[in-house]
Amino acid sequence: MQDGLNIIEAPSPNFDERLLPITMLVLHYTGMEDAESAIARLRDPDAKVSAHYVVAEDGTILRLVDEEKRAWHAGRSHWRGIKDVNSASIGIEIVNPGHELGYRPFPDEQISALIPLVHDIEQRHGITRGNVVGHSDIAPARKQDPGELFPWGKLARLRLALPRPTRNLMDPGWTDGGFLMALERFGYDVEDAPAAVTAFQRRFRPELIDGEIDAECRMILLALLLPKPQGDD
Image (cartoon, rainbow, N blue to C red; front, top):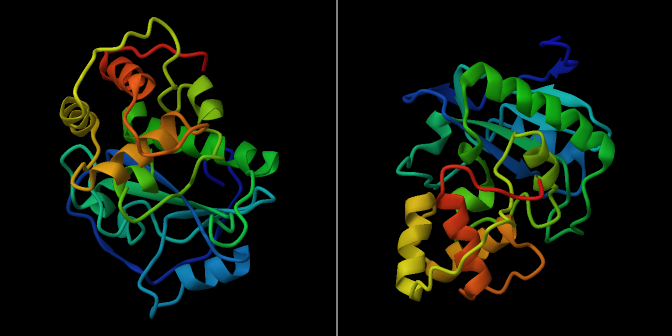
C-alpha cells in the first residue's frame, strides 16, 4: 500500500540510475493488444523498455520500477530544455491498444485509479501542472500517446494537469514562426514543426488535429503562457 493506493509489485529489470532530480510525470498508453502483452514487454530484459507504473483498464496498478530509479519509457525526447527525460521523470503506462490496434476511450475504472496515483506522485515530488505531460508532448515527431481520447480535463479539474484555456482568449496575431517560438518557450521541441503543432493540438484542442497553426491555436498557447491559464476545467 502507498498512501491508500493498492499497488501490486511486478519488478522489471529495465532501469538504471537517475542523473537528474524528479520534476516531470509522463503519461503513456501501452499501444499493445492487451495488458498481459504490454506488461510482459515492459519486464523483458531484451526489450529494454519499462515504466514505473502500469494502470490496467480495470484499475489495477502495478509498480515495475522504483521511483528512485530511472525507468526507460521516454526514449528520445525533450521538454522545457530537458533531453534526458527518463532521468527527470516518472513514467506511467496506461493500458490501451492505441491508434494502431483499435484506440478507444479510457474506462472510468482506469482513470479513477490513475487520478490518486498521479496526485500522490505530484505531491511527493512537487511536480508542477506544466510538467505533467503526454508522451506525444515530449516526442511529437515519434509518438501520439496517450492521445486525443485521454481525459486531460478530468485531471485539470483536480489541478493535476494544465487546463485547456477557454476564458479571456485573445489572438496575439503571431506569424507561424512566432507561434513556433512561443511553442518552444512553452516546452515543445519544434524541430519538426508540423509534428509539434499536431502534438499541441492533440493535447489542448483534440477536436481538430490538422497540424495547421490557426487563430484558436494562437489564443490557447498565449493563455497557457500566462501565469494562471483559465479554463472550464
